[in-house]
Length: 111
Image (cartoon, rainbow, N blue to C red; front, top):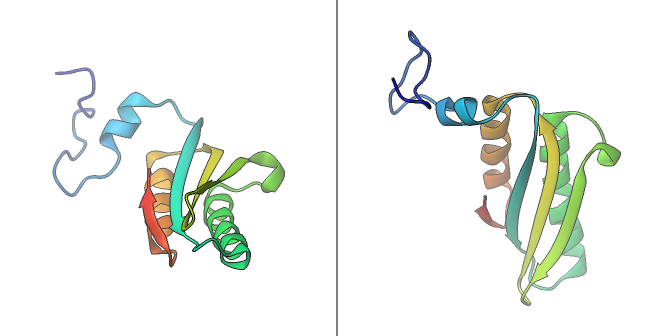
């Protein structure tokens, strides 16, 4: 059995989420989410997009704006990168946040 193999009896197939994250991270842990959105150099679009990202991350991780680190960086004229550091409780929480970030209108990348 390898270092990152799931425990015996745990499903390990293409339909399983989180085995690698569970093996590599000790929860709860600090995790960095980065998302890039198309905001077209528009202050209102940038503010709305940023608020939606904050709602997703904080809503899933709990806490408030004071409990997360957030950096907003323009990426050229058309895009905005938002990086948030938050405490997560499980690999499922990480996966849920990534799925919801993908669903935000304007999201072009998430990592």
